[in-house]
Length: 353
Ligand SMILES: Nc1ncnc2c1ncn2[C@@H]1O[C@H](COP(=O)(O)OP(=O)(O)OP(=O)(O)O)[C@@H](O)[C@H]1O
Image 1 (tube, rainbow, N blue to C red):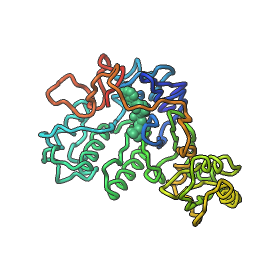
Image 2 (cartoon, protein in one colour; image 1 turned 90 degrees about the vertical axis):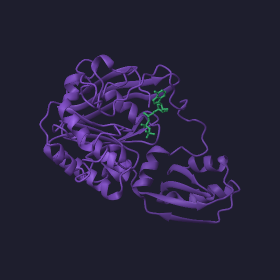
Image 3 (cartoon, rainbow, N blue to C red; image 1 turned 30 degrees about the vertical axis):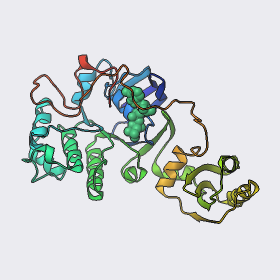
Image 4 (cartoon, protein in one colour; image 1 turned 135 degrees about the horizontal axis):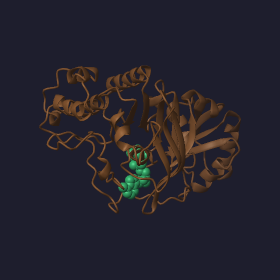
């Protein structure tokens, strides 16, 4: 069975197309890393999986059901770690987990879940005293309630220290071993390496690559990163480099141009810069890191180009938005249902983030 299936999904907010004609399939039991730079459309896609935002076009199916009509059943089987999780300051961490257990009518031991996410000993403290990383751990404990068939984690490593990020990866792997499907977003490729079966890279709302991390590496194989100290390089010089055969991306890091290119294109790069009147003070190559790989897919045309996507990128607006405080439980609201999703009749047309 497919755990997640998006077909031709587009989401437009006023003059911003956040997601564009997206086809995406995640199979049952897969760990899928959903990557992209800031503003690529990851959270919007996740909001559509949760029916917090309705697509402008296309269909969204989760766990074999239509999110628009079967939201209650889907949410019962799904654990969510939302972006920007907010806590109830005065309530203890344990009370948050208890609430998640009650809202799913489950029988998990809250202390066992707190223990699992490394919050043993902190369960009695008010969550308002928790650090950012502790809040993230708490959100994960709540997402794990009732052994969900699908875990949707939005930037789960955000705020975690390296040990916390490693523990998060171990939990993700353990959940997959149990048979759960895990879909999580990140803008850091390192965090999904070693834990994801497959990675999809989103850029300007479109899926620009989808493969295992190893497959992505192979796809850009033979590439090297050339760092050129070229203080005087203007946009025309950068464009000349970008136009060369064998060059897949150019970014600027201060006075240094970082060029992803085939190894036999290096001399052409230097020659093109010199032809453009640029004095090359120094250059060297470095091994492709995961970060380079990510940049190759997401920022290949980022330097010196006018908005090449044709997309107007403005900040979120309040237009047509509703306030959706879906992240934290409301212990005073006995009808509030799952902590991680709105009631059906409250399904938000748009989310104010
Ligand atoms: N409610 C909204 N109203 C208007 N524009 C929005 C709204 N929500 C998102 N957008 C826009 O849609 C685009 C994608 O945003 P989204 O939050 O989905 O990106 P993201 O990949 O999750 O980014 P980040 O990594 O920074 O969280 C951005 O241009 C953003 O400004």
